[in-house]
Length: 199
Image 1 (tube, helix red, strand yellow):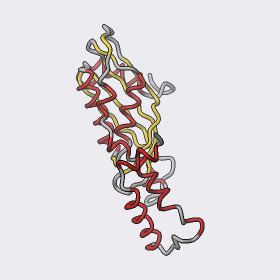
Image 2: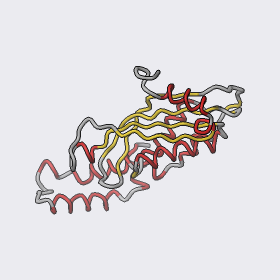
Image 3: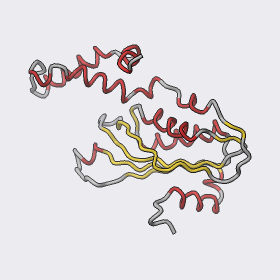
Image 4: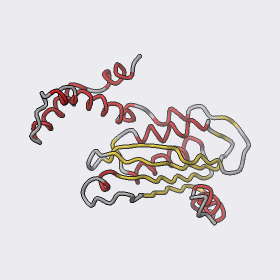
């Protein structure tokens, strides 16, 4: 089944396309000119794809876990992600670093990246996105500790408004021993930080 068919089932593409046509008219463009004729439906399909996380359950990626007596940190760094800021519907993108301290259960590493995507592919703010990932990992893995750090560039401030290209927003969410235990917190921050600057 193609992605267009799947997205068309869950999203009112025609309604989005009609709204985009109205936007083009409102800014003074001609939506019937050659270059714009198919733009409303292209934008509709784009939104269906970018907001696919609204129709998925991130927890579904953690239904299969493995019993493993591993008691050190598990870290997955540099997971690329992109999302849309809910304030302006403009993209923000960057990388997520995820760590957890197992409590007898581990997850497949690809599942960690899928959790990031499932939460990112919906209207978001970076602060909430960071918390949602950490909370789900703590709950579903029954982890002793969780840490999530996200670094992203937001086009709502690099291309418009204050126009500060090159700025990077960093958010963190710490749970369990990654927050309460000083030694674990220090170790996880070194592992999730920039290896060129970590001491």
